[in-house]
Image (cartoon, rainbow, N blue to C red; front, side, top):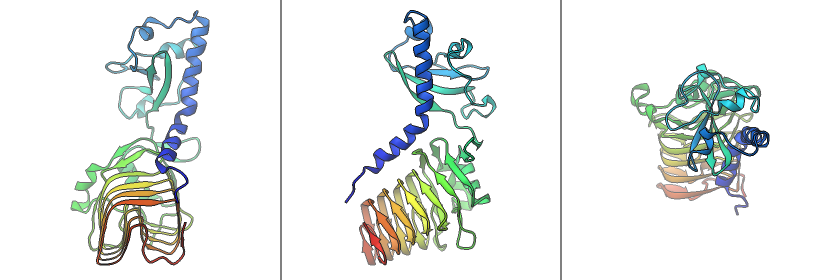
Length: 313
């Protein structure tokens, strides 16, 4: 029985990343109003509700339909924001987007900056950077924005994405999706085993807050949306789309010897034997998780998991 809403938990995780930045800008605007008799400058007060404003951290245009809040920085109300304009993802030298609702400025979106952050996590800002996790399978990673992996349909002569880790060299690191979405991942490796976003994850590996949408994955044995063969920990994650294989095929995990908590799949899972909504073959623990969609196979087919050796709670 589910005791939490995984979608709500993912949204909370994503929002918490921005909370401190939102509070900082709200405080800065509050101080400005207090010092200026409650009057916003014309560039802010004359614009309509739900208008987006840009806080500029370097030289350059703030973009169309936006207004610079640089005055808050210049006047000392807002500290210089820690965004490198040279690494600005959309190229307009902006650090933050502020959505105005009336006189409230609360919704903040930070531009994604690749590299190692102050917590020691490598920030991922593109599908190519995500694929490059294969060069350091023991790393600590953080997704910094929604990324569209539609380009993978043309990778590797049509085979698509190369799973992170395999049975010889396993993923032992950590990856926090921060609630951001990875969409349109494509894999077409019908004769290969452990085919998924992550091919093989060791017991020390951990995946949290990962949102996979519209995956299209084809493999042989141990096929899934998120992990082909799991002995680690998966928490607060979901996948949607289509997964096809032969044996031990699951929407989220193909073969599970680890722990899966507060996760779900929505989509179509198709194969021959050992076909499950969340997990194809489960020798581990699955807690507070569910599957919706079409689960189709010839033998040993289950809506949640198949071939259970440990426990589903």
